[in-house]
Image (cartoon, rainbow, N blue to C red; front, side, top):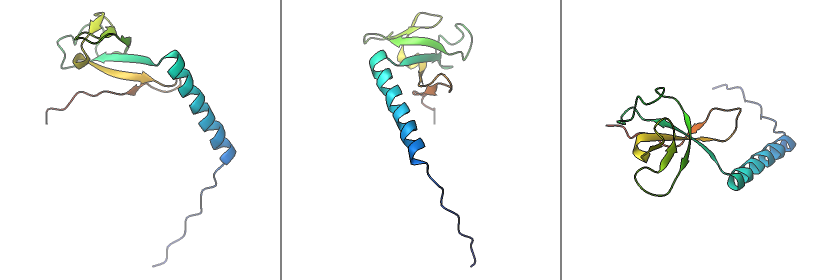
Length: 104
């Protein structure tokens, strides 16, 4: 068996340090200033159809209780009615952090 060896990838350690420092600074700012959250009404929710379907909207999480998700076209929702997204960087799409359980 004659296989060609793959050359090792050269790692720019200075660039990696800079990138990690940027990530660390961003995480510190998020912890101090707050994380931007977005919501989207789930298709299984009785509220689906309020506003534009599948649209993301700014939210905040309020005190515990059934309707603790504040924001969106209806003003407040239950956690089971909304998928949550976190904004880490304005240059990238939001990251979905909750998912609707599948029926299977």
